[in-house]
Length: 392
View 1: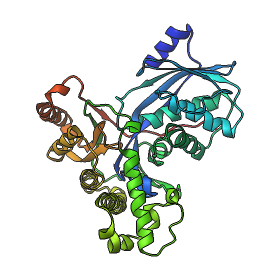
View 2: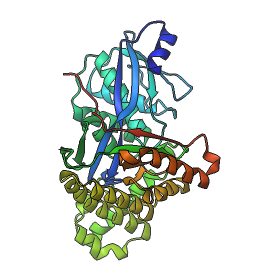
View 3: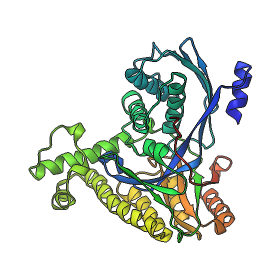
View 4: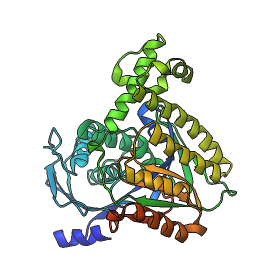
């Protein structure tokens, strides 16, 4: 791996170990966790690797093959506020871990991503792979729920992005050839085996050629709009609406939304419309997967993508083009934007028998529409994979 080669180049010896965290796809259940809804997801067999070595002096020194600047801080002197660079997620993770456990040992690390940045939860995967390595060199044995909690703190409280728990849950709990179903309100999850009657599938990833960071998108505004809808609906219905930041659409029955939705500002109504219909799609998707009906699951993924365009109002023109192309391409069971839908990529579940035809056809149609992105657009095939492996 390149991260190992780079580690040897920098430090003149082999790394102590290489940690790995997969990236993820969420074919049905997009934007659900913001309102404490349910999601379905799969970890990929591709993701983030980190070659590392313990540093007994407590210094953390991390290099990324995707970014130019090396980051450095001490386990006892973590910047209280973000530094506005790629390593802020790692500083936040260090701070979260230090609040729960005493840290004495630092780390030298080189991070490598096997996928382009944008839409596959690279920030969560980088945070988790670093967190697992830092815990190991400090002799800390983390439980899966702690990994999720600490990684979430880094994104929400340190970096300032109002994400839910979807990314972290998929990257920690997932197992190969099983669909992960998570209730993000309770934290309960189920791994649903792939039925023997299900047709073969692969995961196609179509990168638009545009990279993005959630911190620079409209994600936080969408989350606030959904929360505002919940808050207003509670008030209209005479429910106890409590604190704004603790209000979620999960608290509001669908019947209340239907009764009062026309009183909501149009953006709030649309965000809530997506959330409620996405919950219905998740329920149907879980049952479709149980019975091995990949065609039904795929249709629900396409519907999820359309609702994200019309009701969550996300997706740049390039991603919408990719989505439209996928919808009319033979051999694609279903797909949607991946991630928050601001630049990034689209993902699709495809029939392996049509792989080459799909890759060729999508590329030709996309670059015909966006010729300036030739050389930046990428497509690759992945399989489902295991989530993070924690040592006992």
